[in-house]
Structures are given as structure tokens and as C-alpha cells.
Image (cartoon, rainbow, N blue to C red):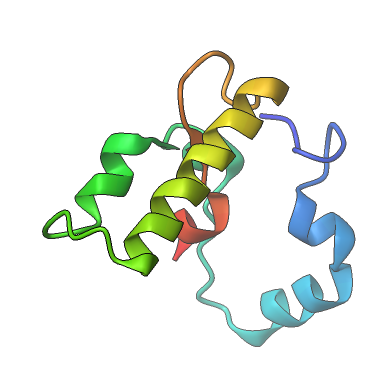
Length: 95
């Protein structure tokens, strides 16, 4: 698998290598979730709606639905997920 910034670099490590170094040195028990894993999990509208127990049209729910719609539309312009309708949530998946 290639990096998502350069052929060998992942975004967070490439842009904040000092923080990455601190994290890597903080423990011997570190598990990385590589991009080939997180890119196998596309977040879509169905996932968004599953986050809510009921449809209540609250301001928070409306914001999250609109944000998801925006991220999917943006992703589809850049084709990060190929042609799969959705977007990647790399950092959230690692948590």
C-alpha cells in the first residue's frame, strides 16, 4: 500500500513527524492501523443514519447529515474511494 501524501508517507506522520516520534517512543505496545485497512472501510449515508437512534431533525443531526453529504460530494470529485459512494474516516477508524 502506498502513502496518502507521497508514495511512502502517510499524512499525519508526514506533516507532524515530531508528534509521531513522541507517540512511537511513548510505548512498546503500539498497534498501527495501516491505510490498506482504513481504506477498506468507507463511511456512507447509511452509516451516518445508523449513528442516530431516531430521526429527530435536531440541529446536531441536521449538521451531521449535511457534513456527511458534503464530504461524500467532495470525495466523489477527487475519487479518493474510487467510485464507491462515501468517504474514508482514517483517524476515527483507528480509535
